[in-house]
Image (cartoon, rainbow, N blue to C red):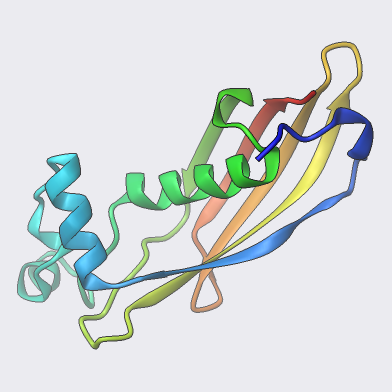
Length: 142
Protein backbone atom coordinates (compact mmCIF):
# COMPACT_ATOMS: atom_id res chain seq x y z
CA UNK A 1 0.00 0.00 0.00
CA UNK A 2 1.30 3.45 -0.89
CA UNK A 3 1.74 6.27 1.57
CA UNK A 4 -1.33 8.50 1.60
CA UNK A 5 -0.93 11.87 -0.17
CA UNK A 6 -1.11 14.91 2.10
CA UNK A 7 -3.03 16.85 -0.57
CA UNK A 8 -5.89 14.31 -0.35
CA UNK A 9 -6.51 14.91 3.37
CA UNK A 10 -8.51 17.66 5.09
CA UNK A 11 -9.43 18.48 8.67
CA UNK A 12 -12.60 16.60 9.55
CA UNK A 13 -12.02 13.69 7.19
CA UNK A 14 -13.09 10.41 8.75
CA UNK A 15 -11.25 7.15 8.55
CA UNK A 16 -13.35 4.14 7.57
CA UNK A 17 -14.69 2.23 10.54
CA UNK A 18 -12.94 -1.06 11.25
CA UNK A 19 -14.35 -3.88 13.38
CA UNK A 20 -11.82 -6.35 14.77
CA UNK A 21 -13.00 -9.56 16.43
CA UNK A 22 -11.10 -10.95 19.44
CA UNK A 23 -11.44 -14.47 20.78
CA UNK A 24 -9.97 -16.10 23.85
CA UNK A 25 -7.55 -17.92 21.52
CA UNK A 26 -6.30 -14.52 20.30
CA UNK A 27 -5.55 -13.58 23.91
CA UNK A 28 -3.69 -16.83 24.56
CA UNK A 29 -1.67 -16.36 21.36
CA UNK A 30 -0.84 -12.76 22.29
CA UNK A 31 0.18 -13.81 25.80
CA UNK A 32 2.60 -16.30 24.29
CA UNK A 33 4.26 -13.92 21.85
CA UNK A 34 4.30 -10.91 24.19
CA UNK A 35 5.44 -12.76 27.30
CA UNK A 36 2.58 -11.20 29.29
CA UNK A 37 1.25 -14.36 30.88
CA UNK A 38 -0.93 -12.65 33.48
CA UNK A 39 -3.83 -15.10 33.87
CA UNK A 40 -6.47 -12.32 33.93
CA UNK A 41 -6.07 -12.42 30.14
CA UNK A 42 -7.06 -16.06 29.72
CA UNK A 43 -8.48 -17.53 32.96
CA UNK A 44 -12.01 -16.51 34.01
CA UNK A 45 -11.57 -17.80 37.56
CA UNK A 46 -8.50 -15.63 38.15
CA UNK A 47 -10.17 -12.66 36.44
CA UNK A 48 -13.16 -13.02 38.76
CA UNK A 49 -10.88 -13.20 41.82
CA UNK A 50 -9.63 -9.69 40.99
CA UNK A 51 -13.11 -8.27 40.37
CA UNK A 52 -13.52 -8.74 36.62
CA UNK A 53 -16.50 -10.46 35.01
CA UNK A 54 -14.37 -12.43 32.56
CA UNK A 55 -10.87 -12.47 31.10
CA UNK A 56 -9.83 -9.21 29.42
CA UNK A 57 -7.72 -8.32 26.40
CA UNK A 58 -4.19 -7.08 27.01
CA UNK A 59 -4.04 -3.29 26.88
CA UNK A 60 -1.05 -3.42 24.55
CA UNK A 61 -2.94 -5.75 22.22
CA UNK A 62 -5.82 -3.29 22.09
CA UNK A 63 -3.42 -0.39 21.55
CA UNK A 64 -1.54 -2.34 18.87
CA UNK A 65 -4.75 -3.06 17.00
CA UNK A 66 -5.48 0.67 17.06
CA UNK A 67 -2.00 1.35 15.71
CA UNK A 68 -2.65 -1.10 12.89
CA UNK A 69 -5.90 0.69 12.13
CA UNK A 70 -4.01 3.98 11.74
CA UNK A 71 -1.17 2.53 9.67
CA UNK A 72 -3.64 0.81 7.33
CA UNK A 73 -5.12 4.25 6.58
CA UNK A 74 -1.78 6.07 6.39
CA UNK A 75 -0.23 3.41 4.16
CA UNK A 76 3.14 2.98 5.90
CA UNK A 77 3.85 2.19 9.55
CA UNK A 78 7.09 4.20 9.38
CA UNK A 79 5.06 7.35 8.65
CA UNK A 80 3.45 7.30 12.12
CA UNK A 81 5.64 9.54 14.27
CA UNK A 82 3.53 9.63 17.43
CA UNK A 83 0.85 7.43 18.97
CA UNK A 84 -0.66 7.94 22.41
CA UNK A 85 -3.61 6.22 24.05
CA UNK A 86 -5.33 6.61 27.41
CA UNK A 87 -7.61 3.76 28.34
CA UNK A 88 -11.01 4.30 29.94
CA UNK A 89 -12.14 0.67 30.04
CA UNK A 90 -11.00 -2.90 29.55
CA UNK A 91 -12.10 -5.23 26.76
CA UNK A 92 -13.88 -8.27 28.22
CA UNK A 93 -13.44 -11.34 26.02
CA UNK A 94 -15.85 -14.12 26.98
CA UNK A 95 -14.85 -17.71 26.30
CA UNK A 96 -18.09 -18.39 24.42
CA UNK A 97 -16.77 -19.09 20.94
CA UNK A 98 -17.78 -15.58 19.85
CA UNK A 99 -15.53 -13.36 21.98
CA UNK A 100 -15.64 -9.60 21.57
CA UNK A 101 -15.40 -6.97 18.88
CA UNK A 102 -13.44 -3.73 18.97
CA UNK A 103 -14.77 -0.97 16.73
CA UNK A 104 -12.20 1.61 15.63
CA UNK A 105 -12.99 5.03 14.16
CA UNK A 106 -10.82 8.03 13.41
CA UNK A 107 -11.01 11.64 12.33
CA UNK A 108 -8.37 14.03 11.01
CA UNK A 109 -8.07 16.58 13.79
CA UNK A 110 -5.43 18.85 12.24
CA UNK A 111 -3.07 19.16 9.29
CA UNK A 112 0.38 20.77 9.19
CA UNK A 113 1.24 21.82 5.61
CA UNK A 114 4.83 22.80 6.44
CA UNK A 115 5.80 19.20 7.23
CA UNK A 116 2.88 17.35 5.58
CA UNK A 117 1.75 15.81 8.85
CA UNK A 118 -1.73 15.03 10.12
CA UNK A 119 -3.06 14.46 13.61
CA UNK A 120 -5.71 11.78 13.89
CA UNK A 121 -8.10 11.43 16.83
CA UNK A 122 -9.06 7.80 17.39
CA UNK A 123 -11.91 6.11 19.15
CA UNK A 124 -12.34 2.48 20.12
CA UNK A 125 -15.41 0.84 21.59
CA UNK A 126 -16.52 -2.63 22.58
CA UNK A 127 -20.15 -3.49 23.19
CA UNK A 128 -20.94 0.23 22.87
CA UNK A 129 -18.53 1.07 25.70
CA UNK A 130 -15.68 3.52 25.13
CA UNK A 131 -12.22 1.91 25.48
CA UNK A 132 -9.96 4.81 24.51
CA UNK A 133 -10.27 8.09 26.38
CA UNK A 134 -7.82 10.27 24.50
CA UNK A 135 -6.09 8.61 21.56
CA UNK A 136 -4.00 10.55 19.07
CA UNK A 137 -1.75 9.53 16.19
CA UNK A 138 0.48 11.83 14.16
CA UNK A 139 1.71 10.78 10.72
CA UNK A 140 3.84 12.38 8.04
CA UNK A 141 2.27 11.90 4.62
CA UNK A 142 3.64 12.01 1.07
